[in-house]
Length: 426
Ligand code: LLP
Image (cartoon, protein in one colour):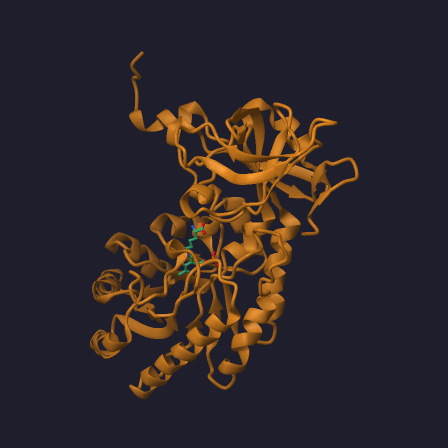
């Protein structure tokens, strides 16, 4: 990516900022930290906006991918809507100033209180099940507003990705099945004073690399649209193809479709349908715009295995442990001169064998304190961080051109003790 480069002396840059300078300024206590490129997020958003030019469309950023408030404000400022999965995400989206006409509230387990918030805010709300429909109509009556609802279809399409990030299979917990459509339509009709059916939705999964899958899902949803319109619902306005476009984690030249290719695959199918397209990208907007910068504690060898032990871990970044996910790792400065590269597992200090950031990586020998960048960590990394082993949430830094600033400070020990109240035992 043009925003991340290594100069002739072996130093990694994010835009015009040398990552090592940020690492030095953050100090030993400030490591690890996340670092994001403003320009990269902008470029990713524009790729969708340009692909959708001339179409009625909403780009709904999937907030779960990275919920940093400053990044949300940035995306909102560029015109993005928001795709939400919890009451707290909704409150955050409201703080960030998102236009509620461009928000979608998803989820297979929304609580009645969360639905009240979403109805009150005027979000598009997806119906995921029979009980969900019941809860949404009850909520609309409580709030005395008609809820704008979309049907989350379970398309039974295999996205050919890791089972944990596959959501559109028949056996998945999400969405409603074809055979139940008539029940849902009847029920929405019976509750028409509370529910306005405005769209259909499907989400196949995440890290998808084939646009044909989106074409299949769109074709299927258009069949649903047809049936729903035949049942004389004339309020259908939205066709939501979900999110899911992958990014090039491995950097081995595998072609990942661009937003343009994704949209071009479905655009002809929408012609003449009077539908507004909704896309819900998360990873493809922020994933390749971020890195985790972590510092080397030491290097060790056990038998034939070499380890680089760093201060970052599965607590800050769980994707490798949870999905066996691959993230490209590079030193942010040169290794020790004259030492040949070796094959290392890059591991953290957490007391689990599954605590690794990368396996079998060929890297120069790093001196203690040297920074490693775990790349493509803008999506589902910070937002999935935990306090396991009492580790704190790392700081987040935003680079913009030749400047950078901390957009969220790291947690402190006191933050971890917040819930106990006073007085504290000694
Ligand atoms: N829309 C819906 C309904 C979703 O469930 C998701 C993600 C998205 C949109 C955004 O998908 P994206 O464009 O980011 O692929 N933690 C996993 C990914 C979980 C994705 C969950 N749903 C990971 O780290 O790979």
